Image 1: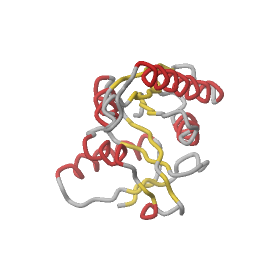
Image 2: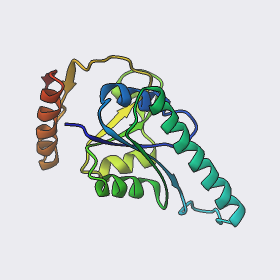
Image 3: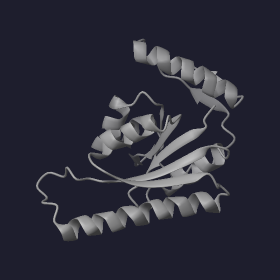
Length: 178
């Protein structure tokens, strides 16, 4: 079911738990670790020196993500550094690779979904993506997955999400709660 996973990383190590989780949950998937050089940052002139530093940072980020996957026993890994507006490029890349899932981290002070803080990049990915997005706020070692919660608002998009939730739940042999 989940065969291709895109993991955007900025290299600060904050999404290490996301990388480990998807590696453990979907060990037979193909992983795409990407980092985006934000060439659209407002108020910042992209000098050659700044660009070079951003590129080096992005290359270190994907290398770090790849190393974590390898530590988890994953061998089917591709890495890529991309330039552009992060949310747009992440969604475009995932579509181009025909990904089944985008896995990202969110910030949280508590473990409840309502307490999660979503940054503008993640918010835009959630708005623009037709590919399912997995968000994790903190380390989670609850494997295998036992329950899948499907929250719906009755829109057409949620109908498509329902189909995915059913397939996802059945492929992992879990309970589906609506």
